[in-house]
Length: 298
Image 1 (cartoon, rainbow, N blue to C red):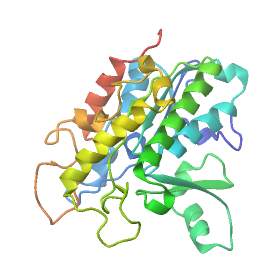
Image 2: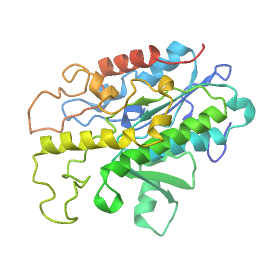
Image 3: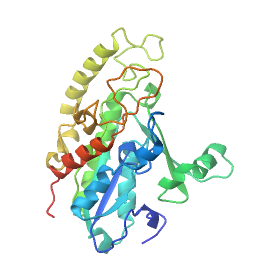
Image 4: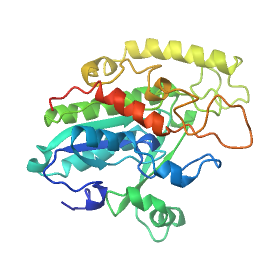
């Protein structure tokens, strides 16, 4: 099975008699993620038995993984809908489980068409992004923050809910088993300041008079109220979403800051970049959480 949307190299095992476990997500679902902590070698991180591999083994399924580091929820939704749509009916009927591992709402995804005349686009096609192309003529890139010109954080969270509902509707229409999970906090604010804009003048040097902690508290309170009135939020199937409601609930928050991440996130040091990706203990816990909550008949 190899076409422009569904190349053979996205298969991580090749037993065609097994049902498919199809996964997409950000770096927490990326099989190629390196270490961001200079004290931890890439070889150690690459050697982890990651949660999606553990699940494939436990469920005795054939893994297809579209996880890509830095990606946002538009990519996660699109990678699954694009590729499942490209499958024939026989192969669709062989899907055992789909797991979208959703990322932060603030991330913005872009798709580019290959171009030899645009240095930036050409560079994307020539560097290690090639590992993530499921259409050889197009490639995805992402930025990890939002700003008022791209909508406030209330919009970005609702936008992610729309992607979730869109994917849910697509999978149910095709009678495909699925379980959704939130990897990183959906509502996490950018580090650049109060981009969600509490009614203050856009572009002023002082966007907020509150402290960062106060801003987060105000934002979460207002966001919870906003979502309670957002119809699509109330249409998400809670039985197929692990640890619903998703605000203040994510895999990230269920892991131990000292034991389950590549870096000990309780350490306060400035001489290295902390790595908040799961270590082997973290991947084991994630696999257990999903295995204990999947809603499928094996």
